[in-house]
Image (cartoon, one colour):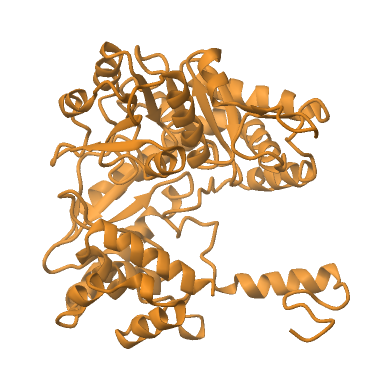
Length: 483
């Protein structure tokens, strides 16, 4: 490094205008966060003013530190209002505001582990469609995961299989409302009852559906009971940065009683410094997401969320009907929510379809095959989808036709076996990137000249690999991308 120079750090400070101009340049290749053309990752109300109010409140709370609520009582008042609104909607309970669904799940797993000491290694029993955040929590917190099959037609968890998997070392059983891959609600009452019979806690992952399903029910959809009002359900996670439409970094985990919530806390007095008591995994953290969530709830109110629920329900119905009429495509299962999973056929490769849709300005999220569930495209229908649902269906139809004409991805003979046989630990990032390039795979966030990246080949390779090898390859992809 040249003396006096630090890569990424200018010698002198830059103006706000200059910085914002560079930010705009950096974002040129990003997917749009408004308008409904990105059917995953972002949630758009389509309502003017709501996101702006949240952004201003976020900025107002940006420098407030949630580390010490006695120093900043505003965060206590705000969190009580936000958590209280979630609890009122979802059967009561006592909650914690977190940074997202993964952290909410992490705290629920920690609380279950600490509340039920076992002789062996603690275990979580869950359906194969449960979110990987549970696997992540188990990895970090020293638990084993016991996956159970789902119904091959409905994709819902099998209560009998879950009940059979519970043993003396099981500390937590999981149900989803809905599961992300196909948008269906597991039989929560039966699963919770099976857990209760064995004295085991039951968590409902309602990260996607917690703030959506009640409004869909009020809008006329048939939604079974899934929240803390169901006997045997002891905790529940609900993301507000999904169908609560708050800025990212906003989730709530609810516990049936305050004693269980206290199991999620962490305190340490074994040092001579400041008092350490954390309700979340993080210690110092900005109150910006809390401010943004609070402002979003206040800006929309009950009437706003009900209108969004009605629009979302209608858009999802139109989408399911329209996709079912496109040759070579089918909706998997019967979604209970506004998450729609679209499978292809021998003639229409969904990975190619996804690339074709991206060329047309739309992002449809590919999902790999697993546990007998075929590869598919995931579409999250939000409040902004209704105005563009016919355009979306036209894009899917045109992209399916283009995918049919192109044909499915044809992988070079022996490529999958070669990837599966790689000793990835012996390769540095440069060597891995070179091998990928030799196979025609460019590792990066975008294509040449800002064009949408071609991902069909990458997804086809990943889809053909066992899950453990997929994971190892994905780690290397990410490492190369940031190298």
